[in-house]
Structure formats: C-alpha cells, structure tokens
Length: 149
Image 1: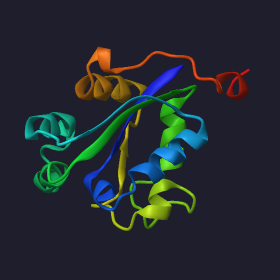
Image 2: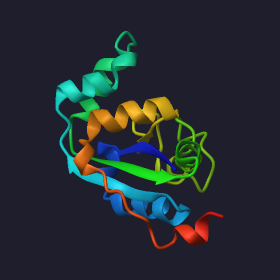
Image 3: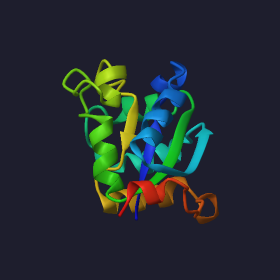
C-alpha cells in the first residue's frame, strides 16, 4: 500500500466543499488514514512550498494558504499518488477534465481547490511535515477485499 498527502485548500473550505471532496476521494477507493482541519502557520507554509521560494507567486501563495483553514489528510491505496493525481485533475482547473475535482469545482490556478503530492517521495516528505506518526491510523478497511486481488 502507498500513502499520499492531500490538502483541501482555503478556497474549498470557505466554499463548504470539504465533504464533497472527501466523498469523491473515498468513493474512488482511497482510504482516509488521517485528517485535520487546521490553520496553517506561516513557517509550515514556507517549508511546504519551499521549492517555489524564488518564483514570483511565492508570497501570494503563502498569504493564500495561511488566510483561512485547510483540511489536511493522508490517504492510502495501491498507487495512491497517481490515483489521487488523476481524480484531482490538472493544476489549471480551466484545463482539467470534467469529472475531476478541479475540473468540476475549480475556476483558476490561484484558487484550484486542492493540493496533492506529485510523487511517492514528495508524499513521504509532506506527510511527515503535516502529521505526527501517532496521527496516522493503521487499519484494514472492510472494502479492501473488494478493491484488491
């Protein structure tokens, strides 16, 4: 099994889309193993988006992600990173396929609803950054026998 990090961003929280997004994630078969509604400290935002520090949008990104609560979560499945990236949709909601979270719910790149780790390595780093080990639940879901051979 593979785990990945997802963050429902402030725009989606403010639009009351948390339940809709979690429902889509769970209906796909991804198992929720951690989740929390939280205000993001500036230091955490800066560490999370550190790779963008020299880009012109960095400061506005930090301001946005710290402007209102986010819902951070960890999900688990076989190929969790690629599956979650697929249901999230492309970064630009205007180009995201219908049926994806961004394609159905987002409008602009700057307010694109959700973040998802882009690789297994990023997922491990982001999970460790946002969650303590004791916040992750290890359990076997009842549906796993119906999802995997």
